[in-house]
Amino acid sequence: MLETLTLLLVCQLIGEAIVRYLALPVPGPVLGMVLLFAFLMARGNVSDDLAKTTGTLLDNLSLLFVPAGVGVILYADLIAAEWQAIVAALIVSTIATIGVTALLMKKLAKPLPRDGE
Amino acid sequence: MKSGGGDLFELWVYLSTTPLLGLTVTLVAYLIGRRVYEHFNRTPIANPVLIAVILLVALLWISDVPYRRYFEGAQFVHFLLGPATVALAVPLYRHFAEIKRNALAIFVSIVAGSTTAIVSAVGTAWLFGASERTLLSLAPKSVTTPVAMGISESIGGFPALTAVLVILTGILGAMFGTWTMNALRLKDWRARGLGMGTAAHGIGTARAFQVNELAGAFSSLALGLNALATAILVPLIIRLLSS
Image 1 (cartoon, one colour):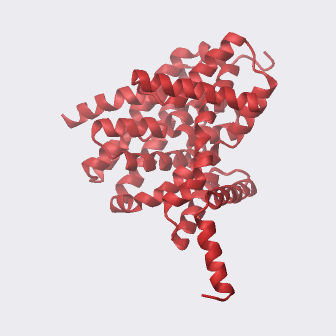
Image 2 (cartoon, helix red, strand yellow):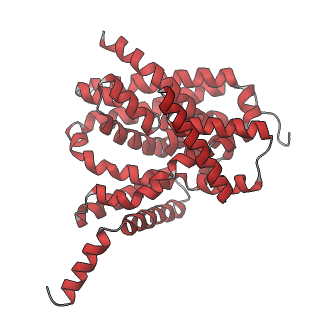
Protein backbone atom coordinates (compact mmCIF):
# COMPACT_ATOMS: atom_id res chain seq x y z
CA MET A 1 0.00 0.00 0.00
CA LEU A 2 2.76 2.40 0.97
CA GLU A 3 4.66 1.83 -2.29
CA THR A 4 1.54 2.47 -4.34
CA LEU A 5 0.60 5.62 -2.44
CA THR A 6 4.12 6.92 -2.91
CA LEU A 7 4.04 6.08 -6.62
CA LEU A 8 0.71 7.91 -7.01
CA LEU A 9 1.99 10.97 -5.16
CA VAL A 10 5.25 11.03 -7.13
CA CYS A 11 3.30 10.94 -10.42
CA GLN A 12 0.99 13.69 -9.18
CA LEU A 13 3.89 15.81 -7.97
CA ILE A 14 5.78 15.55 -11.27
CA GLY A 15 2.50 16.27 -13.07
CA GLU A 16 1.84 19.38 -10.97
CA ALA A 17 5.42 20.59 -11.48
CA ILE A 18 5.28 20.20 -15.28
CA VAL A 19 1.83 21.83 -15.52
CA ARG A 20 2.96 24.78 -13.43
CA TYR A 21 6.27 25.19 -15.22
CA LEU A 22 4.85 24.99 -18.76
CA ALA A 23 1.51 26.67 -17.88
CA LEU A 24 -0.46 23.78 -19.46
CA PRO A 25 -4.31 23.91 -19.55
CA VAL A 26 -4.75 20.51 -17.77
CA PRO A 27 -4.70 19.84 -14.01
CA GLY A 28 -1.59 18.26 -12.46
CA PRO A 29 -3.33 15.01 -11.45
CA VAL A 30 -4.55 14.43 -15.03
CA LEU A 31 -0.96 14.70 -16.28
CA GLY A 32 0.01 12.47 -13.35
CA MET A 33 -2.45 9.89 -14.71
CA VAL A 34 -0.69 10.08 -18.10
CA LEU A 35 2.68 9.59 -16.36
CA LEU A 36 1.49 6.53 -14.42
CA PHE A 37 0.04 5.16 -17.65
CA ALA A 38 3.42 5.61 -19.38
CA PHE A 39 5.10 3.93 -16.41
CA LEU A 40 2.75 0.93 -16.70
CA MET A 41 3.32 0.68 -20.46
CA ALA A 42 7.07 0.66 -19.87
CA ARG A 43 6.85 -1.96 -17.12
CA GLY A 44 4.30 -4.11 -18.92
CA ASN A 45 2.20 -5.20 -15.92
CA VAL A 46 0.23 -4.04 -12.87
CA SER A 47 1.66 -5.30 -9.57
CA ASP A 48 -0.71 -6.87 -7.01
CA ASP A 49 -0.07 -4.02 -4.60
CA LEU A 50 -0.88 -1.40 -7.24
CA ALA A 51 -4.03 -3.25 -8.31
CA LYS A 52 -5.25 -3.63 -4.72
CA THR A 53 -4.56 -0.10 -3.49
CA THR A 54 -5.85 1.72 -6.58
CA GLY A 55 -8.89 -0.59 -6.51
CA THR A 56 -9.69 0.50 -2.95
CA LEU A 57 -9.22 4.16 -3.85
CA LEU A 58 -11.45 3.95 -6.94
CA ASP A 59 -14.13 1.92 -5.11
CA ASN A 60 -14.54 4.93 -2.81
CA LEU A 61 -14.16 7.63 -5.46
CA SER A 62 -17.62 9.10 -4.73
CA LEU A 63 -16.63 9.92 -1.15
CA LEU A 64 -13.84 12.20 -2.32
CA PHE A 65 -16.33 14.63 -3.94
CA VAL A 66 -18.32 15.18 -0.76
CA PRO A 67 -16.24 18.02 0.78
CA ALA A 68 -16.34 20.04 -2.46
CA GLY A 69 -20.06 19.31 -2.77
CA VAL A 70 -20.77 20.77 0.66
CA GLY A 71 -19.23 23.99 -0.76
CA VAL A 72 -22.66 24.55 -2.37
CA ILE A 73 -23.53 26.16 0.97
CA LEU A 74 -21.22 29.10 0.18
CA TYR A 75 -22.95 30.03 -3.07
CA ALA A 76 -26.55 29.13 -2.26
CA ASP A 77 -27.59 32.79 -2.77
CA LEU A 78 -26.08 33.00 -6.24
CA ILE A 79 -27.78 29.80 -7.33
CA ALA A 80 -31.10 30.72 -5.69
CA ALA A 81 -31.19 34.00 -7.65
CA GLU A 82 -31.31 32.19 -11.02
CA TRP A 83 -32.23 28.68 -10.01
CA GLN A 84 -34.76 28.00 -12.81
CA ALA A 85 -32.21 28.77 -15.53
CA ILE A 86 -29.48 26.82 -13.75
CA VAL A 87 -31.57 23.71 -13.02
CA ALA A 88 -32.97 23.65 -16.57
CA ALA A 89 -29.54 24.14 -18.14
CA LEU A 90 -27.90 21.43 -16.06
CA ILE A 91 -30.61 18.81 -16.60
CA VAL A 92 -31.04 19.44 -20.35
CA SER A 93 -27.30 19.62 -20.97
CA THR A 94 -26.40 16.55 -18.91
CA ILE A 95 -29.01 14.33 -20.58
CA ALA A 96 -28.19 15.68 -24.08
CA THR A 97 -24.45 15.19 -23.59
CA ILE A 98 -24.77 11.62 -22.32
CA GLY A 99 -27.16 10.77 -25.16
CA VAL A 100 -25.08 12.29 -27.97
CA THR A 101 -21.76 10.87 -26.76
CA ALA A 102 -23.01 7.36 -26.03
CA LEU A 103 -25.15 7.02 -29.19
CA LEU A 104 -22.29 8.21 -31.39
CA MET A 105 -19.85 5.85 -29.70
CA LYS A 106 -22.25 2.92 -30.10
CA LYS A 107 -22.57 3.75 -33.81
CA LEU A 108 -18.82 4.18 -34.45
CA ALA A 109 -17.18 1.62 -32.11
CA LYS A 110 -15.97 -1.67 -33.53
CA PRO A 111 -17.84 -4.69 -32.14
CA LEU A 112 -16.38 -6.07 -28.89
CA PRO A 113 -14.22 -9.19 -29.22
CA ARG A 114 -16.02 -12.32 -28.02
CA ASP A 115 -15.83 -13.16 -24.30
CA GLY A 116 -12.76 -14.99 -23.12
CA GLU A 117 -10.37 -13.32 -25.54
CA MET B 1 -22.59 28.41 32.76
CA LYS B 2 -21.06 26.62 35.70
CA SER B 3 -23.18 23.47 35.59
CA GLY B 4 -22.88 20.41 33.33
CA GLY B 5 -24.52 22.36 30.49
CA GLY B 6 -21.64 24.81 30.55
CA ASP B 7 -19.13 21.98 30.32
CA LEU B 8 -20.95 20.48 27.38
CA PHE B 9 -20.88 23.83 25.64
CA GLU B 10 -17.15 24.12 26.22
CA LEU B 11 -16.70 20.60 24.91
CA TRP B 12 -18.62 21.56 21.75
CA VAL B 13 -16.54 24.72 21.32
CA TYR B 14 -13.39 22.61 21.59
CA LEU B 15 -14.54 19.81 19.28
CA SER B 16 -15.94 22.14 16.64
CA THR B 17 -12.51 23.71 16.15
CA THR B 18 -10.60 20.44 15.63
CA PRO B 19 -10.21 18.91 12.15
CA LEU B 20 -11.28 15.60 13.69
CA LEU B 21 -14.95 16.62 13.72
CA GLY B 22 -15.13 17.73 10.07
CA LEU B 23 -13.37 14.56 8.92
CA THR B 24 -15.52 12.25 11.04
CA VAL B 25 -18.87 13.74 10.04
CA THR B 26 -17.85 13.54 6.36
CA LEU B 27 -17.19 9.81 6.64
CA VAL B 28 -20.31 9.16 8.73
CA ALA B 29 -22.52 11.13 6.31
CA TYR B 30 -21.07 9.26 3.33
CA LEU B 31 -21.52 5.86 5.02
CA ILE B 32 -25.17 6.73 5.69
CA GLY B 33 -25.51 7.78 2.04
CA ARG B 34 -23.96 4.53 0.87
CA ARG B 35 -26.16 2.48 3.20
CA VAL B 36 -29.27 4.13 1.72
CA TYR B 37 -27.90 3.64 -1.83
CA GLU B 38 -27.30 -0.08 -1.15
CA HIS B 39 -30.69 -0.43 0.54
CA PHE B 40 -32.39 0.78 -2.65
CA ASN B 41 -30.30 -1.63 -4.80
CA ARG B 42 -27.98 1.14 -6.01
CA THR B 43 -30.73 3.06 -7.74
CA PRO B 44 -29.05 6.16 -9.20
CA ILE B 45 -31.62 8.50 -7.62
CA ALA B 46 -30.32 7.57 -4.13
CA ASN B 47 -26.88 8.93 -5.07
CA PRO B 48 -24.55 8.62 -2.03
CA VAL B 49 -22.75 11.92 -2.77
CA LEU B 50 -26.06 13.76 -2.92
CA ILE B 51 -27.29 12.21 0.35
CA ALA B 52 -24.01 12.98 2.15
CA VAL B 53 -23.97 16.58 0.88
CA ILE B 54 -27.58 17.17 1.98
CA LEU B 55 -26.86 15.75 5.45
CA LEU B 56 -23.70 17.83 5.89
CA VAL B 57 -25.21 21.07 4.58
CA ALA B 58 -28.10 20.60 7.03
CA LEU B 59 -25.63 19.89 9.85
CA LEU B 60 -23.52 22.99 9.13
CA TRP B 61 -26.62 25.09 8.78
CA ILE B 62 -28.13 23.93 12.10
CA SER B 63 -24.85 24.07 14.06
CA ASP B 64 -23.77 27.37 12.48
CA VAL B 65 -20.27 26.02 11.78
CA PRO B 66 -18.69 27.93 8.87
CA TYR B 67 -17.73 25.91 5.76
CA ARG B 68 -14.10 26.96 6.12
CA ARG B 69 -13.86 25.33 9.53
CA TYR B 70 -15.64 22.19 8.33
CA PHE B 71 -13.18 22.00 5.43
CA GLU B 72 -10.18 22.02 7.78
CA GLY B 73 -11.16 18.45 8.62
CA ALA B 74 -12.74 17.46 5.30
CA GLN B 75 -9.63 18.50 3.35
CA PHE B 76 -7.97 15.18 4.17
CA VAL B 77 -10.65 13.43 2.13
CA HIS B 78 -10.59 16.15 -0.54
CA PHE B 79 -6.82 15.78 -0.87
CA LEU B 80 -7.17 12.15 -2.03
CA LEU B 81 -8.90 13.32 -5.24
CA GLY B 82 -5.44 13.97 -6.72
CA PRO B 83 -3.95 10.50 -6.12
CA ALA B 84 -7.31 8.91 -7.10
CA THR B 85 -7.18 10.74 -10.45
CA VAL B 86 -3.66 9.39 -11.01
CA ALA B 87 -4.94 5.90 -10.10
CA LEU B 88 -7.37 6.02 -13.06
CA ALA B 89 -4.34 5.09 -15.19
CA VAL B 90 -4.67 1.47 -13.98
CA PRO B 91 -8.10 0.70 -15.54
CA LEU B 92 -7.01 2.68 -18.62
CA TYR B 93 -3.93 0.47 -18.92
CA ARG B 94 -5.97 -2.72 -18.48
CA HIS B 95 -8.33 -1.76 -21.30
CA PHE B 96 -5.80 -0.03 -23.52
CA ALA B 97 -6.13 -2.53 -26.39
CA GLU B 98 -9.87 -1.86 -26.57
CA ILE B 99 -9.28 1.91 -26.40
CA LYS B 100 -6.62 1.88 -29.12
CA ARG B 101 -8.85 -0.17 -31.42
CA ASN B 102 -11.54 2.50 -31.15
CA ALA B 103 -9.39 5.64 -30.99
CA LEU B 104 -11.16 7.46 -33.83
CA ALA B 105 -14.65 6.61 -32.56
CA ILE B 106 -13.68 7.83 -29.08
CA PHE B 107 -12.23 11.08 -30.41
CA VAL B 108 -15.28 11.91 -32.54
CA SER B 109 -17.77 10.99 -29.78
CA ILE B 110 -16.02 13.10 -27.15
CA VAL B 111 -15.64 16.18 -29.38
CA ALA B 112 -19.35 15.93 -30.29
CA GLY B 113 -20.30 15.38 -26.64
CA SER B 114 -18.15 18.26 -25.44
CA THR B 115 -19.73 20.62 -27.98
CA THR B 116 -23.22 19.42 -27.00
CA ALA B 117 -22.46 20.01 -23.31
CA ILE B 118 -21.34 23.60 -23.86
CA VAL B 119 -23.95 24.70 -26.40
CA SER B 120 -26.94 23.04 -24.70
CA ALA B 121 -26.07 24.41 -21.24
CA VAL B 122 -25.46 27.98 -22.39
CA GLY B 123 -28.41 27.86 -24.84
CA THR B 124 -30.92 26.57 -22.28
CA ALA B 125 -29.85 29.08 -19.61
CA TRP B 126 -30.03 31.87 -22.21
CA LEU B 127 -33.63 30.88 -23.09
CA PHE B 128 -34.44 31.18 -19.38
CA GLY B 129 -32.96 34.67 -19.31
CA ALA B 130 -29.88 33.93 -17.19
CA SER B 131 -27.33 36.69 -16.61
CA GLU B 132 -24.15 36.82 -18.66
CA ARG B 133 -22.04 35.86 -15.66
CA THR B 134 -24.12 32.72 -15.13
CA LEU B 135 -23.95 31.84 -18.84
CA LEU B 136 -20.16 32.10 -18.85
CA SER B 137 -19.88 30.19 -15.56
CA LEU B 138 -22.04 27.37 -17.00
CA ALA B 139 -20.06 26.84 -20.21
CA PRO B 140 -17.29 24.57 -18.80
CA LYS B 141 -19.43 22.73 -16.17
CA SER B 142 -18.99 19.21 -17.57
CA VAL B 143 -15.27 18.89 -16.82
CA THR B 144 -13.33 18.22 -13.67
CA THR B 145 -13.27 21.14 -11.19
CA PRO B 146 -9.74 22.61 -11.57
CA VAL B 147 -9.99 22.71 -15.38
CA ALA B 148 -13.52 24.12 -15.29
CA MET B 149 -12.51 26.88 -12.90
CA GLY B 150 -9.54 27.83 -15.07
CA ILE B 151 -11.69 28.02 -18.21
CA SER B 152 -14.38 30.00 -16.40
CA GLU B 153 -11.85 32.55 -15.25
CA SER B 154 -10.30 32.94 -18.70
CA ILE B 155 -13.65 33.76 -20.37
CA GLY B 156 -14.91 36.12 -17.65
CA GLY B 157 -17.13 33.73 -15.67
CA PHE B 158 -17.19 33.34 -11.90
CA PRO B 159 -14.88 30.40 -11.03
CA ALA B 160 -16.41 29.73 -7.57
CA LEU B 161 -19.91 29.47 -9.11
CA THR B 162 -18.49 27.19 -11.82
CA ALA B 163 -17.05 24.88 -9.13
CA VAL B 164 -20.51 24.43 -7.60
CA LEU B 165 -22.12 23.91 -11.04
CA VAL B 166 -19.51 21.22 -11.79
CA ILE B 167 -20.43 19.26 -8.66
CA LEU B 168 -24.18 19.62 -9.36
CA THR B 169 -23.61 18.43 -12.95
CA GLY B 170 -21.73 15.38 -11.68
CA ILE B 171 -24.50 14.46 -9.25
CA LEU B 172 -27.20 14.95 -11.93
CA GLY B 173 -25.19 12.85 -14.40
CA ALA B 174 -24.83 10.03 -11.90
CA MET B 175 -28.57 10.26 -11.13
CA PHE B 176 -30.01 10.55 -14.67
CA GLY B 177 -27.28 8.99 -16.82
CA THR B 178 -28.29 5.37 -16.27
CA TRP B 179 -31.93 6.22 -16.89
CA THR B 180 -31.11 8.18 -20.10
CA MET B 181 -29.01 5.38 -21.55
CA ASN B 182 -31.56 2.70 -20.65
CA ALA B 183 -34.23 4.80 -22.39
CA LEU B 184 -31.97 4.92 -25.48
CA ARG B 185 -31.48 1.12 -25.25
CA LEU B 186 -27.71 1.47 -25.00
CA LYS B 187 -26.11 -1.75 -23.78
CA ASP B 188 -22.50 -1.25 -24.89
CA TRP B 189 -20.45 -0.60 -21.71
CA ARG B 190 -17.85 1.34 -23.71
CA ALA B 191 -20.48 3.77 -25.02
CA ARG B 192 -22.16 4.07 -21.60
CA GLY B 193 -18.86 4.81 -19.87
CA LEU B 194 -17.83 7.37 -22.47
CA GLY B 195 -21.17 9.17 -22.10
CA MET B 196 -20.88 9.29 -18.31
CA GLY B 197 -17.30 10.56 -18.28
CA THR B 198 -17.93 13.22 -20.92
CA ALA B 199 -21.08 14.60 -19.29
CA ALA B 200 -20.37 14.09 -15.60
CA HIS B 201 -16.57 13.90 -15.03
CA GLY B 202 -15.41 12.18 -11.81
CA ILE B 203 -18.78 11.76 -10.10
CA GLY B 204 -20.17 10.09 -13.24
CA THR B 205 -17.00 7.98 -13.42
CA ALA B 206 -17.47 6.86 -9.80
CA ARG B 207 -20.98 5.71 -10.69
CA ALA B 208 -19.67 3.98 -13.85
CA PHE B 209 -17.14 2.00 -11.80
CA GLN B 210 -19.91 0.90 -9.42
CA VAL B 211 -21.80 -0.57 -12.37
CA ASN B 212 -19.10 -2.05 -14.63
CA GLU B 213 -15.30 -1.96 -14.79
CA LEU B 214 -15.08 -1.52 -18.58
CA ALA B 215 -17.55 1.37 -18.36
CA GLY B 216 -15.37 2.85 -15.61
CA ALA B 217 -12.25 2.68 -17.77
CA PHE B 218 -13.98 4.40 -20.70
CA SER B 219 -15.46 6.97 -18.36
CA SER B 220 -11.96 7.74 -16.96
CA LEU B 221 -10.69 8.22 -20.49
CA ALA B 222 -13.59 10.54 -21.35
CA LEU B 223 -12.98 12.56 -18.18
CA GLY B 224 -9.38 13.24 -19.21
CA LEU B 225 -10.00 13.86 -22.92
CA ASN B 226 -13.06 16.03 -22.34
CA ALA B 227 -10.99 18.28 -20.07
CA LEU B 228 -8.72 18.96 -23.05
CA ALA B 229 -11.57 19.26 -25.58
CA THR B 230 -13.52 21.67 -23.39
CA ALA B 231 -10.49 23.85 -22.69
CA ILE B 232 -10.10 24.31 -26.46
CA LEU B 233 -13.80 24.46 -27.45
CA VAL B 234 -15.29 26.79 -24.81
CA PRO B 235 -13.41 29.96 -25.85
CA LEU B 236 -14.19 29.24 -29.55
CA ILE B 237 -17.90 28.58 -28.96
CA ILE B 238 -18.33 31.59 -26.66
CA ARG B 239 -16.78 33.80 -29.34
CA LEU B 240 -19.15 32.37 -31.97
CA LEU B 241 -22.25 32.69 -29.75
CA SER B 242 -21.52 36.25 -28.67
CA SER B 243 -21.03 37.52 -32.24
